[in-house]
Picture 1 (cartoon, helix red, strand yellow):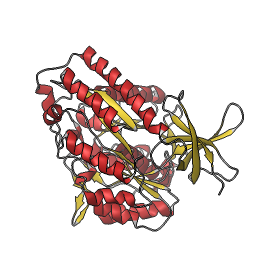
Picture 2: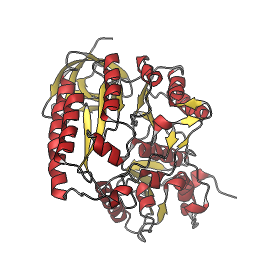
Picture 3: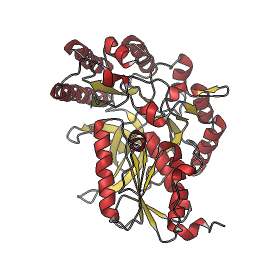
Picture 4: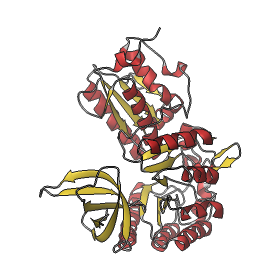
Length: 443
């Protein structure tokens, strides 16, 4: 008979480190919640932990390097006395086990980590891959590492874009039961969550029984309580007017991360993307017709095989046209096993870097231009941090409904995880991220 979980966790500490996407963040939060329920104390990666859990990323070569560096750091901290657990997409793309790591757990079995830790501290040896795998079999996460609550609604992708490793490491598209998502959302709001962030690999393709993604989001919006809903990242090819009309709801955040990847139709076709620049443009136009300040953020890849100077110029022009609130710029990274690996016309590494630098400079100017439009407006800011500045003044920071960071001097009653109405007075141009500066409005 298995001993009560509390006996194994009591007095022990588990450190977590998450790399990559919000889907990874959700899964880490859920695993951390489960081990906390088992009596362990949960901390970020630090020296005195009894076990280290790394939720990894492999989307680019840079992500691989960060994962390896994090593994090495955990191994140094553990120094043979504490087990290191590595899970996530890096494990799936690198199935050869690192002998220095005690547990090497793929994405399908990530949900078994709490069970693996309990068995380990009972002195048992367990193979995680003999345990029950479930991509949605997670303990509903509490707000351990984040103020906002991530909700996993979908897993995997069937698109197989030519540059992308994700379908190989996350598997085919699967949708979580709508009833389970609604139940977890309702519980999160009852626990006091003020922002729900929907996460998945390709959420616009969500379908469970009769419910599509629009129906799922509409159901969440109708739940009782004071909260707002944000969608983490979407492909732009399945967004019909039914979906776009959801942004008229007062609980919906006016922000979407729509992955563009290139401003050139020729390159989009080579990437096997499911849209054109014009169809992308039409989505952005409809969102901005709903709200001229609607924040659209995106991803762009530079130096994809065969990308000419003219193709790259089209990406620069797209950034200027759409005034993105933020752009993640990635130099093309060869992923083993993808179609792009076999393509001709490789762009030299130095040219990829040059294009990345230039595109990032243009993107930063447009980001600044977008955020300047918000000066003078009023924002609903979810307070994520209260801290004392070097001058002794208490400062509050958080994100507005437009997904823009705001820093302001809080009132006496302002607390963490509250939504505060803030007048945007200016912008800190020297903060690197163009943080907005505000003044809390009287209640």
